[in-house]
Image (cartoon, rainbow, N blue to C red):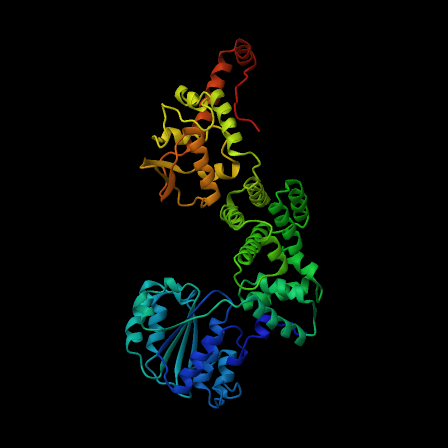
Length: 524
């Protein structure tokens, strides 16, 4: 095997060797065949998908002395060979990251007026063009507006949004796509076969997935995997090298979450921890699996049997919520003191939100509400009288369809009657108005969307506690105060009162005066 890295050794030299960018190749070959050439082309897309490579092949095709019938460069003529090795006088490649100044651009443009001596076109390829300074872009504008017939600009960038619109409007824009994992895997299989290297299909698929759409990244990872496995690519070694993990472990955790089995989920999670994984990648894998399960639940496209089986075990609303929980965990990944806490928190939240079956009837729940309201100091005397009424009767002080206030909304969450699933979602919703039997709540922008079952549960509880039958509507806006804020304030007040009571205790005062003791309410 050659010591040359795979990314360089197998860099495409003709259009037919380009992988995953057939739409771009077609445009360029048609431009050549029709003779409809633009004076400027800009190639955009993420790293390692072929922007610069395609630009070089296009430059060779434009100046090739023996272009094939398929409009491919011959790679045999002097022009093609010189462009390939990088010493053609009519093809000038510039790295904008190292030549950002206006003086560099002026020097380039001064030579642009001269016709090529041995080729049809003088071609400038500016790589990472978004790195040019504003002055450099301005210096280009006039030449780009009315370029000489022999001059063609090729530009490549990973951040096209940073290129001024005045420049973009003068170019033909070609957006390259990320390459699908299946296409990358097929490409790697061919390369490894030509290199006479042993590799199983699972290893190849793991590398293709880890490359995230970049052919160059896939080849670089393959080089590293070859070195790691001493010339052999085995799935266990490759997975360990990439920091990924077998899907069976992830699916076991998901299955136990769906079953609501916390003990089994914990055991499955501990098995994950033993592999020294990259937790951000693991969370991304969980999100991908939940997405596949949701797709199976909605019968969108083809799904694997395991995803179909998991989809049949839970309702659609719960599955969507699981995906949202893991997305939020990934979004806040960087703030966790320990990376594995992000994964563990997502699993804990998933189990906490599990929609456990409620066997108690509405009448039993009402009896529970009555007992709770009689013992709670947070409810008013009038509400205590209301809850002591026999089931099915209305209180004269609070008839059906009476008013429902912000205070009623907050008091609803001061008991444990709202189930954990519904409670956690609505704790962040604020009261706006109650009018004509319609309750309007303020829904924070980043909140979880409440399900129909959760809304129905809330309406039943309001009817049981306040004897109010209503409909619930939502307005997307962050509330000034919500039940969670009030509960946190009450907890802080309770802690403060407790600390004050301790301070007044004579024994505590003695310890503070003689042993320099201090009161700390917060503890681990």
